[in-house]
Length: 384
Image: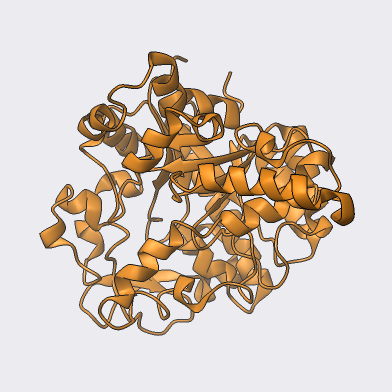
């Protein structure tokens, strides 16, 4: 298939009964489900209690077509949610309206299911989500909908590896890794997952802040979940969104300097929704300090750290005009950045991606424009 524009960061909202219908019978009464929320909308309940908030920022971008004055934190009912959130064929049509050929699909409510204390129930929900994503949603056209299966990294590593192997066999196009509780992804304990991913020729991918690669213990409070950001005082609720664009500098540099990509030279690591304007400075600082400090620090590799950017490490960008300008003169940024529309969230470019792309890539060579819009994603996802 010829790809001209790939959105490397799209999202879904699972249908109301995806867990109730798919978990084993003994879990059905306890499975997560959509209920009427305290704010009058519909939201996910993970323990049978009334949700605090209904759907909001996770759907409002597509609902309003980027009409920022109509954005809502919550209070949205399920029947208002656009069909492209939960139906693969409708998602493809939404992409086509936006001039997008294919999209990588990131998760939603399953992250809450993964936090359930009942690990048997949590794992049943994760398997249910992955089956729905691959067998139902992305089956509308797996070339146009790239399934990112959810991997339970906080369970014993053999459990995570088993699920990774299972979903790759089913046809998953990538492995989504949530934020680990204690130990960041630079630790060798995750090597079995990297081995499965490289053998299966699929990338591992994280998303801000749920996939920063550090642990929840290491994560700044302002990068936390809904309680730490969305419901903060006015001003802090916006700055939390801003700060998350810089959340993957630590995990990327941690993984590079601890030799993850030296041990697994074919591993592809994708950081979602983080933009790329910071990439030139990271590349320069990594190389500079490597040259200064390598003789006493003895890092487990010999090559310049920036060489891993665009070879093993990729990042997704939205309307990052600063990053696009840097890409014109900075090779690491040019080979690392991948376009995304973030449908249907509040930062989405949909349905105006083509207008934004034209402005953002003005003056770029055809080769560089193609790389950022599709070519880098083709390499990251092994689509050729």
